[in-house]
Image (tube, rainbow, N blue to C red; front, side, top):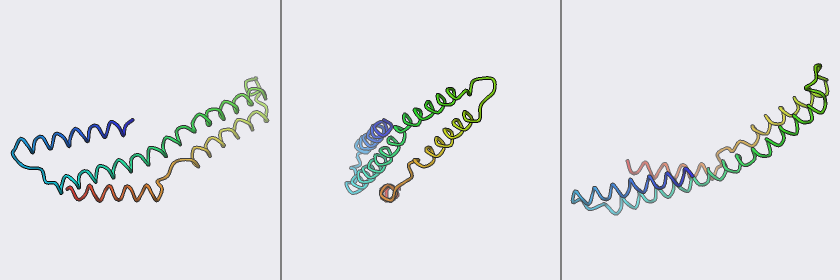
Amino acid sequence: MRIAASLVVLAVFALGALTLAAADGDAPDPEKMSTQIDALEAQVEYLRAREDALTAYILLNDQRAEGILRTTKASRDAGFEKNRIPERSRTILLKGMDDLAASLRAELPALTKEQAALRKKADALAKKLK
């Protein structure tokens, strides 16, 4: 969703720049425009790759939530809410929290080599424009 909004904003800025250049009587430099387009395409490719990884990670939150619900139910069933909290219930709850923490850490989407290469390409092309 954010990528689409970013693309719209980039397109508006590019169109505005071309309009201003035309209004000033300056003809746009085709080579510079080509570099700008290449830079934007490279940035979009990188952002899409990251979006895929982040979306996959976020979609796993439903499974994580289900794990928490199973853990709390098992703890309740083992007597956690009663006056004295039994050892078995404490063990179940703590194990569930350990599992959740491990899941959140282990599955965090790190930047892949392919994504790093896309980012490097996008940054290099954008640097040419400065």
